[in-house]
Length: 501
Image 1 (cartoon, one colour):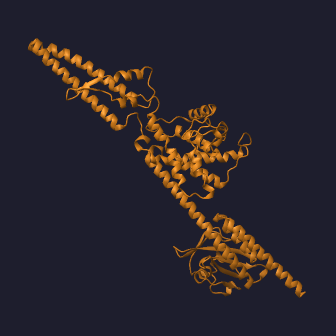
Image 2: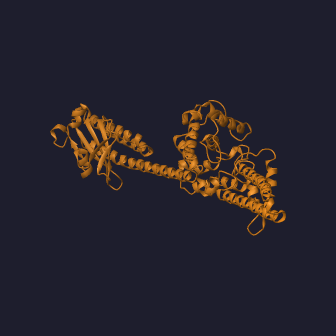
Image 3: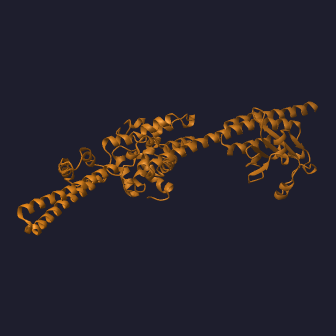
């Protein structure tokens, strides 16, 4: 019988040690603190055969212990280091093993009173990191079957606490890294939007729409994307790439970035000033003609001369004002009517006389080129400068030491303006080399750019028209029609933005 009892005890100990190894592996693999802490408590209760356990982590800045996972409690608990049994263990680093809680003056009965629980035995041990520093406390209550915690329980719980301390430290470090990345991404988005306040919220909306589209693919049972699935880390990678897809705009001149009309404000001011000089020139020429006419026809003809010149000057000023108004129409980001560009060339031939008697053109050659832009407000060179933001984005994001799970952020952001037919930018790469994440972002980026609130250089379009534009681009082979079908059928816009714009 003695040998059988020893064999049974040895088997129990081996089982517990094996359990410790298993939980050590599980803890080292878990990076989510909200999942790790309950796992530690469950295994601690099992290893020392306790009714329930609590885990407290040291908050050195506030000199407190805190716990958001205490079995039997739904609320976060905070207590000063040195206060109560857990606080004393954290302060001294010594194990406290109490066989009869109510007979020990260190035990605070208030929890039992408020919860209706009856504490009998307590085992409280420190958690130490690799350097031996106390980082927290594990507290076990009520050994099962009415027994008391023994030396073996102390040894096992200390071993588990050491493993737990390392796992918690890794999880907290992982959280800090995540917060660091989140803070960096948020600051980057602020920097982007500071360059062009009219686009505020664009990056966040594109990120939300793109992630929602990726999640919707999980419910897609047909087509080329029927089996595609994104892990939580892949969704985070996609979100970061979407939030930072326009970061390269910080490398584009602000004047080009927010250019609302074909001429820059300072260019328009100079043009208006030139028309004012031309106006004064017409008035001066009129008074010179009046003086010459009086000399020729005499003072008695003054009323008749005045009437003739006022009528002539009025017509000349009217024509000049019409030319200015036409020029201002050309300056807006609108398509000119038939013959508009021919008339612009005629206006380019008009001159005025400056203060030195020189005949100068009303419109400078550069102004004529800008006013002749057929679509939007940007010249070919300026459009290329805007498009260069993708290269800037890629170069910037490639400098960041992303973690293994986020390493494709630069690649995904780099391809969000590429087209399936190879007509996109900046690399004009074919469809098969464009990541599916970039194909999704292309759809959401265009949709939000079309439907976003009015900007200085364009008006917002309604949801229905935006969907029609996306459909036309998909039919022409520029956007992925299968992804667009999921985007529409899953009602991504309604689910993310609350309504169809």
